[in-house]
Length: 198
Image (cartoon, rainbow, N blue to C red):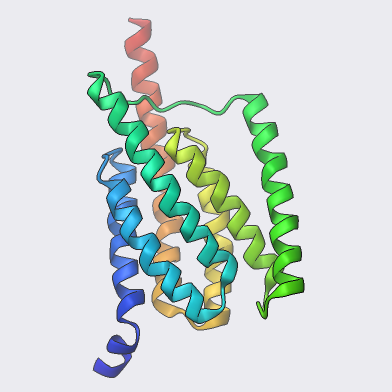
């Protein structure tokens, strides 16, 4: 058991920081961003070793967006307000949907042609959806949770296939917590709407 833990120490640490990221995300606390930065760096190493190149690149993106989200949320806090939860608009949904589709096809083609990825298009699908969801989180858009539910549920099967069992457990938790996060953020919007109406 000790040998198994020691062989997966980086992955286990990444799981723990990712759980902290998820907890602070649901609570809408700015600490989610430094937790996200640390987990992204650790997962870049894990996915490189597992040949999940799109997921490795995705975590590089998480790193950048975590810095952006941290700055964006802090700026709102300095102005004396908490960044409110918003709903996605139809034009934003269309543009984001088209960009996600283009990302899926482009990443899948690159992985299929130029890497030894065993499941290029599945890897590309979760990567493209995760790009969209992370940007939506940085903008505090409620529907990012729905995108995460979709991406995390598919990821469970991918990590089972590659034998990344601690990460599989993490993504099972992610899927459940994304449902909880959606319901919690939705309550926040309801409270904000009722306060604005009174």
